[in-house]
Figure 1 (cartoon, rainbow, N blue to C red):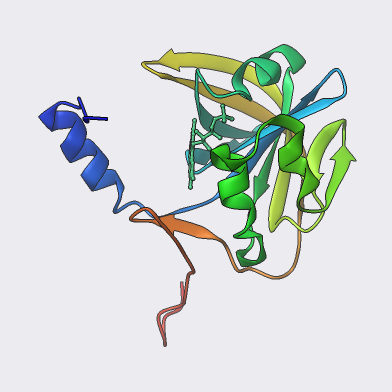
Figure 2 (figure 1 turned 45 degrees about the vertical axis):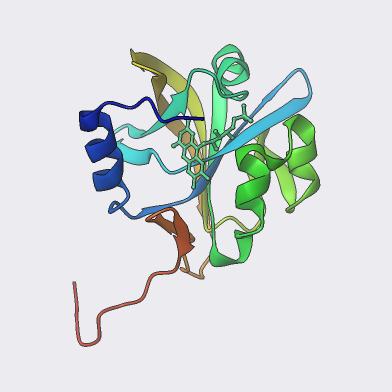
Length: 169
Ligand SMILES: Cc1cc2nc3c(=O)[nH]c(=O)nc-3n(C[C@H](O)[C@H](O)[C@H](O)COP(=O)(O)O)c2cc1C
């Protein structure tokens, strides 16, 4: 299919391919059915009160259930979760996505037991911007594992991080 993007949109997309971010799985549960998708548009907003934001396409299958349930989880992926990314971005649908990975229920939300970090959130606000919803969530519970090896996305590929030798933050 021909790309109908304007020149400004093409430049925006090409520039954003230079933005490296950790891949997360955004999940929710409504009436006993789990929904989830891969996302990189995830950010910390403030620690007081602990708040995150996630940008979710209005057409994504997780969008409506998340807004109706009023709760969601952000599962920050570890390098060991690379296989889950295609499954949670279209290869599988609905509950089938959760047949892979070790899932537990935390505050009623689906959480990967070995997520690098996971946040269970209460939906606080939704701002519509073009095709997407900017979803703000107040963190009810945060957990993490010791190993820090984030699964990153850069230039359309899965990549890993490495430290710059001799550097100290
Ligand atoms: C690495 C990666 C990052 C993504 N980030 C986002 C995102 O931040 N927001 C979003 O709405 N979709 C994002 N997507 C696309 C969704 O994962 C994908 O469109 C969605 O799972 C498909 O919708 P469905 O659940 O209706 O099948 C991303 C996909 C990939 C592979």
